[in-house]
Image (cartoon, rainbow, N blue to C red; front, side, top):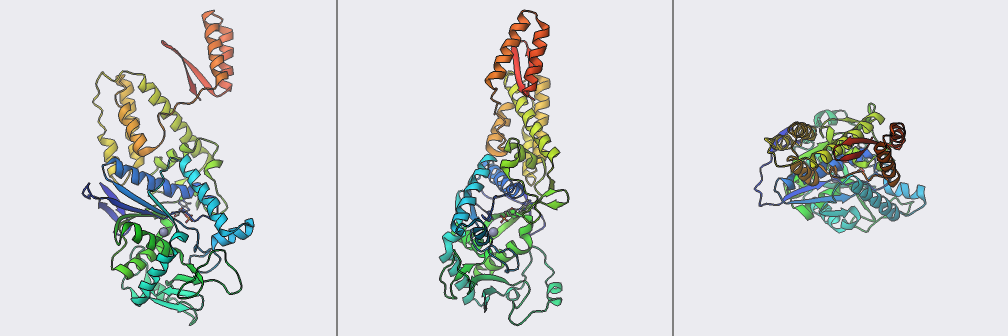
Length: 453
Ligand code: AMP
Ligand code: ZN
């Protein structure tokens, strides 16, 4: 199996012995608002990775954080804490805000068939470990104090920025650093002191004064505690490469001498037109706003490769919804066919696609071709395999049959009676009534079948 590693900029071989647990860490949501479907793309991607590794016979330990403190409005360690800011707006405490949006995140995840990671840890659950982490960095000489907190000195690492291939020389040549400011432009906060004039809801005592941890630290501390000094795979959205993951690597290497993960995987953005979906862009859509089965969005995401940007439009989500319905109808049809007539279908093309850096769009194409073949040969044999990979990996609920409303069933019955009486005018009239309700009837030898349009 090959997985694209941002660190090496190539598809690396993933060939662990199957008896060894695979450790995966996913950067979780910042719970200051509802997650939008762009955010959810990153979690669908991580879910597919974990599910596919399990399907391939690995045992996986999947760990994710919940950022409930320390994520500031600016990536350069200035601005307000996002959760505290929202708390003021909603007239709630930061704790209440974090709880509200954490619950909403897991509801949305459930609607998208995203399995809950084995370990979910809030940043605020692990403050002591984060303080100990900073102490360790301090002992090794990687920190310095400023008026507003403790910072990591990125110039102390010989190859800071290697994940993003940052042009450090270029960055440093152009910088002017005020004496009261950070020593290097790329330095980042490990511990921020609470502002003197404001009372925060979330703050803790520390050897450096009352305050809260920097955003990057939680992932380093949680990864270290639950997965060890170096685990297998780290996932996140593409925007994490330049700052967040670069700094996670810096902290981890400085403390343990090891890069925290071997493979770093990043999913691309969901776009609306030319811009990413994002809060500051004002183009958010939440799972509950979709107006279609949320799994149609999962389908849309799987139709693209995770490393390609994906455009979200009314048309694209509608088309994905139709594609999902059609696929479910195909499965229903195949299930009614005999599975004894033998088929030379093999599932190899599906596995090959997934083994090639989780190429879900190719994997779906292989399912379409299985179905086409099966229909031609009138055999339902492949349906078992499709439903197995759907349950284990794709998570599209392909076995789900639309529940036909009672009034539609009644109309179909009336139409059958009209047909028996050879009252074609009446039967056509009822058919169009059924269609107005969003269903169609097909007359087969074994009686009428009802499908959603
Ligand atoms: P946040 O809640 O801001 O910490 O982000 C949660 C996840 O969503 C991160 O992995 C981001 O990289 C990812 N993300 C944010 N915006 C988008 C987007 N428009 N498309 C895809 N992923 C995104
Ligand atoms: Zn993280």
